[in-house]
Amino acid sequence: MTTAMSLATNAQRLVRQPLRGEVWPPLADRHAYRVDADGTPFVLPGMGGVTLGVHPGDVATGYAADHLEPGLSVRHRSAGPNYALQFLSCVGNRVTVRSGPAAGATGRVVGQHAYVLADLAESDLEQVASGDTVDVLACGQGLRLEEHPTIVVKNTDPGLLAGLGVHTRDDGRLVVPVAARVPASAVGAGAGMVSEYANTDLMGAYAGQGDDLSLGLESLRIGDIVALEDQDHRYGRGWRPGWLTIGVISTGHCRLFGHGPGPSSLLSGPADAFHLIDEDEANVRIAFAAMDGAA
Amino acid sequence: MSDWTPVATNLGGIVETPELASTPHRLDIDGKPYVPTGDGGVVLGVRLGDGVFATDADHAAPGACLVHREQPARHALTSYACLGNPVTVRTGAAAGEHGVVLGKRGELGRVIACFEPDVLERLAPDDAVVVRGYGQGARVPGQHAVEMCNIAPGALSLLPIETGGDRVGVSVRATIASRVIGNGVGRPVEQWDLDIQVDVETAAAVGLVDLVLGDLVAVDDLDVRHNAGYRSGYLTVGIIVHGGSPQPGHGPGLMPILCGPADAFDIRVDAAHQGLTEAALLGYRDQ
Image (tube, rainbow over the protein chains, first blue to last red):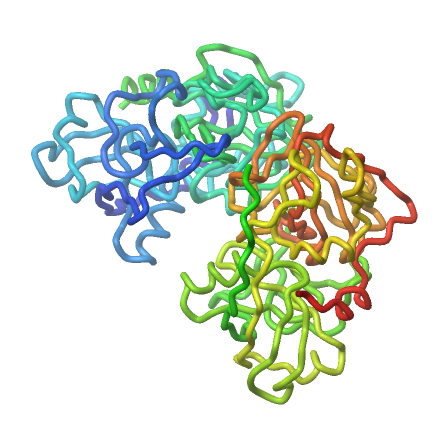
């Protein structure tokens, strides 16, 4: 298939599967507190359940929150089906609420974070609660870019890349508009894990804390497309000079040290296979609107 | 900060039985599958002083990994065991023999203990052990800016570390940038080591081509006091407790022992660096 932006893929060979999950409640433990980088204890919401008021395009940091997961946090209660849900759900996949007052409402997958994270309109989110059933129409794992054999694609709905303006340049490189470039020093928890599950926490984005913790990443927004320098995420997540990974910021503010706003991995390959364009508006919000318009 | 008196605890554990998933393969950084060997349990043929890439194994440690069957107790065993702590074997063919704690590994938690080679040959999975845990909460003698973890205070004498001056002097194999640290960032270092993301081909570029088990390595811009994470101007010193791994984001394991502002240290990168030796560790008798 060749899109208007000239990007040949095997999208027509991919199958779609509905995968069932439920909105998983936030979890806490008996001792309540965690501590931040400075040893200050905190008890803050953000992870699990339904997190209101934060959507793609909104700033990712600056909230009184920890491991902020915008929208719905979805998993399956059994291990095997949950791995299928987590591994096969892709950014941009359609999400449908199946029970509760919001049944029938739809949205899209923004990323993974040991939960599938789904963005819905705020008026729909207001009606969803933990325990509500959610289906993801999973499609995208196995996607290939026919003209870019060194680049591995993962966690990516076949319709997402065109909406992000990703295309092949005359010199054969893959053009990717990015909202930010992230130094390898920022990579925190998530290093060494498989790249179809959870995301890569970025340090250096502790808005409101000390300058010595900053890597200049406090202005990241939810849904931003970012380039992770010297990262090879093709078969896991590792530091590798000369390699590049493109991700989408799917989680927000963290207080827990070594954690932070996190990209879910989308594209990974040798850095010279890419041609990055710095574009402030490179965000899945634009791509989702394009996908909704095309549907 | 006040100086409280550390206490010792006797911790029960067993020698680990290695585990694999129903599909045994893992993937290396280029997607090539391999079957991991030496990842936990008793590992024979690996000793302190060996090169970290000397075996074709995955996270192989020089000795035996100790665990507890109950996960919370396993976390406690891992948290409280410190370098230099004595280990006594209670059951099995090596009952009555002694070993010494080298370090620890992360995720579910493992204590790495060294034994004389003839004792290690007789150790088997499920053998009961007792670790005399002592060291967490201790302070570096005479120093206030540098914090210490994962090591019995007396065991500092086994390492090329000088605490008598204004600054803490440390001889290391290399000083590396925090971006080279992979799995373990964002985790509590009392329960989890830090994997250095290099292999036999990429180690030279960061000064680790000659890295051996027991070496000390310094990491710039890394603060491990409340989880491991990036903080400019901070420095962490650790000891190499396990060998390399083909998995992306993994590699030789660094267990942090000292952390503080970089200017509180006098770090010397030394081509003739001599870290912890097997003779020094096995000859050590903690208080």
